Image (cartoon, rainbow, N blue to C red; front, side, top):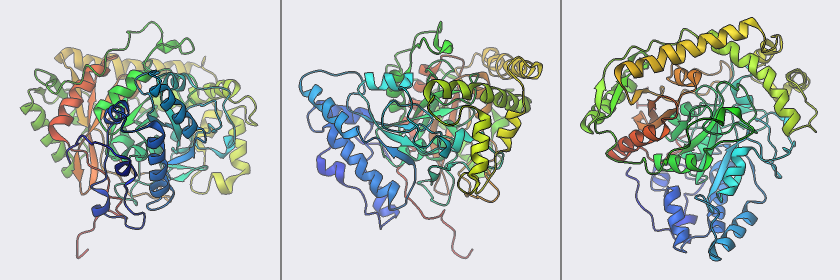
Length: 527
């Protein structure tokens, strides 16, 4: 379905399908105006921020709380309408705070907000705990005029609790459901942000990633996801897993919206050393060139193809399209699958144990839990609600480790930096003079299985995640009504180039279409 420019009236904004009629006929025509279109309508006086917030609140009631019951949103901001009214008054007075003035934004619930909402990482251990202040990225959003609409569900503790976890489930929020097929998984850990973006429950959503937590759910939910270079967006206030790999990033319905949101989020922060002394943010909106693929050198990472013939055939079609758009394809490039998976896992466990108490002390000093050991004890004491489907063996492993002065930690850190970065992506891209690496982001959404946990298959997230490099996923089509994403991975600080490449592919293909909220993936007759 090609994205169209919509002239929005209040009736258009209010029109959504009946919650009792969850079908393709009722959802395929649902308007999905982009953030830029919404800003234009507000600038023209055809739409107010208050009307927009009301529109999203209605969609959330009918799609998230009722109807297909996506369960993508944990908590709504009771101040959202009041903030929107204030922003409307400022607009009428001729004052705009910034590039997002009046736009509603949803945040993953591991991002601190110093307001009436809790910040919990989906855990009941932090339910009702209000952060002492906004995370730096939230401060930036408010300064740019965003309305913080609510907090999205996630894989609890960003999916570091268990090896048998079900993505999209948290003790606080239950299971987030995939808008394209409700029996399929959303992936994670930014499950709610991706599902909410796909269902058009906010103008923009923010996720976080340590390894795959932006790009995988974005791909599986048919939206655009950007994991920036580590240090491009401040991690201040984000409940941590790893100060080596963590970053926030956009999960949105178009590359243009990703560029807009990154423009608001990117910048230095005195509270996050990774953001200091790095190249200044680029003009990401100016990078949106439909001709950006002409002359671009793209390397095909064939080791990361899925082995699913339908998925891989779809990516072959994408490669053919990239060629017709002027890209020079180097196929294949030598980027073997990671030999550092165990080392990465060890780093995450060491850093989570170390970093979590620091976040709790600064942003939740009034909480009953102070350390990882306290979380473990809480989960044990509340097994029925916190561990009905899977346990916390990864927490136990982390708790048994020493500090960051451990030889094992330092060895793992050096191994990952060398193999993922210097001898991995950097070596390949420099030797072939590439603008980006391309591969399928992953396979289609798997059936949710709370007994066995995730069955996600292979993906392309790990090299960029471990190296700290940027990774953009863009819709590349569908396999049996399930979305598939195409990945563009680049060298540090190359977000503008990746956005340009992704934008050119998106504009030429227009693969994204609104979800149909199927109760299950279509099963051929006779089976």
